[in-house]
Length: 482
Picture (cartoon, rainbow, N blue to C red):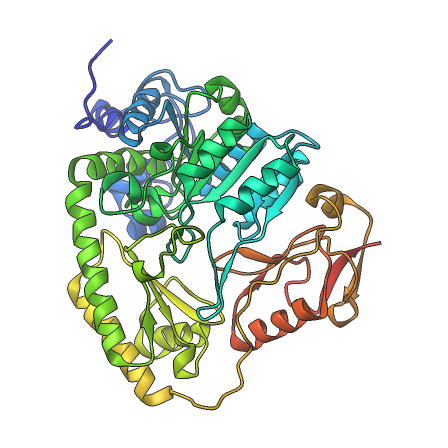
């Protein structure tokens, strides 16, 4: 067996070897290294199309990796401190779904924060798991959901000792971290798995200045979005597992839904990005931390805005804060976060990650430059000067605790009818309604529709939030259980 170090990139090396072989392609994809689609090749480049290839012996196969992909996954596992790593080409959505479906079968309970990404609830629809929601605490000034309190998790475990797993966001979209190490111990002491959604936390593994990463805290499985903060291509992610989980079983679960035609562009981007983060991650993250702190200081100096950070830490529901997150409270200038988001894009050609009812998130990562930060800060200053409003009535940003009537699978697949949304109060929703991003459901299948929720949906639509999830994309009607 050959020795592999973190300087190696097995998928990259195999693709380079394949190119040197000058193979004549009588396989798929049909564009045949770009020759069959000149417009596509002109747009993406010959280098890209020449490695958009299908599985073959020298390149291995993601459905049953035995050589270069297996080697690349072993290096990734070593880099992230896991027993094994799986390359995922369906985004972290597919990794989160694999975690939940590995831990739970039909009727099994999973303890989970309600402010999860829709992918976790989708997984429960697929496998029939029953959620035991831990309602996150709330920062009533900022209007953001926080982490899970350890005491709340302990209470949920005592009330549901038959639950199979505890699910934790590490961190949230805004940078909030729960005490994942204590929660992992609680889960393990009670015979449960600890699942970590680290869609926004792949960088945590490569810096001692950031909150603890899931696998380092004792998580049994962690889903990480390398394409968000790790520098790989969109849709490429990694699923990590520890000693308490069967590698073979997880692989079977993944293959239930993952494509049999995995993109080598995505896989090689994971391979290269893992190598970059191992070799230069500390230096890269130090630079990001400095950039974000500079931006935070400059934005706070503008006035009214509040770019928050570690001062929020309370030792429990905000156990730690990811200081690479540039989260900005905007309501103090009389504008919702989504309104500032729209102004930045439409008037200043600046695309931020998302805006909600009260906050704006600018995602700063490996590719950002100081001059980009300066442009953002200047634009925010101009927006405050030109668009600031006072005395404006604004809906209080608030977490709305859901009333769960039945499991997501029962509601989604059960008999349903479509009603005008104004007529749905008091009925049980059978589909999703959410602002995307961040993709945290306002309503999920199996939850009671209330006047308060309908007010929130109306307000979010009015402010310009992109409402997704329902069958009626205009959200004039909503599916409810009969």
